[in-house]
Length: 151
Image 1 (cartoon, rainbow, N blue to C red):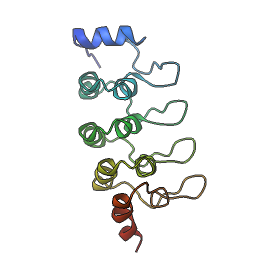
Image 2 (image 1 turned 90 degrees about the horizontal axis):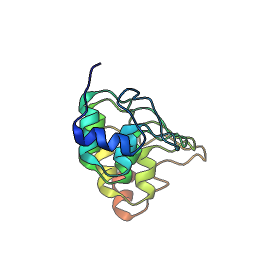
Image 3 (image 1 turned 30 degrees about the vertical axis):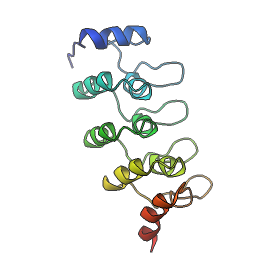
Image 4 (image 1 turned 90 degrees about the vertical axis):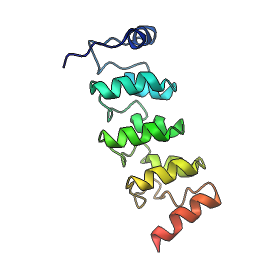
């Protein structure tokens, strides 16, 4: 695929140790360019890379997290929507067996939990410690979202 990044994205890639010749390249934590951009809240850069379709959104870092994890961390609902539309694995389980839904639930990120559920995240998955997103519910609003699903 022939993709020529914008000058801004080219500069960002260079500043962060990435090149447009190798989209599988990772930083010291195992993040590829799109995961790194999302993690650093560089939405414009991430959106350009995502639109170009050059970076693997399902690539995982050393903790086993994909790009969706960082969109959830940043409470970036628009990016969550875009990644899901681009077929990110919404139910990916990291090295501890945690999904983005479990993380968002435990971190009291109600809007993120709502977004993930809207997109069909599997709320029944269990972590390595046999916990579901419901077990991790960090506030009453998340508990109210998840509890009826288990009835």
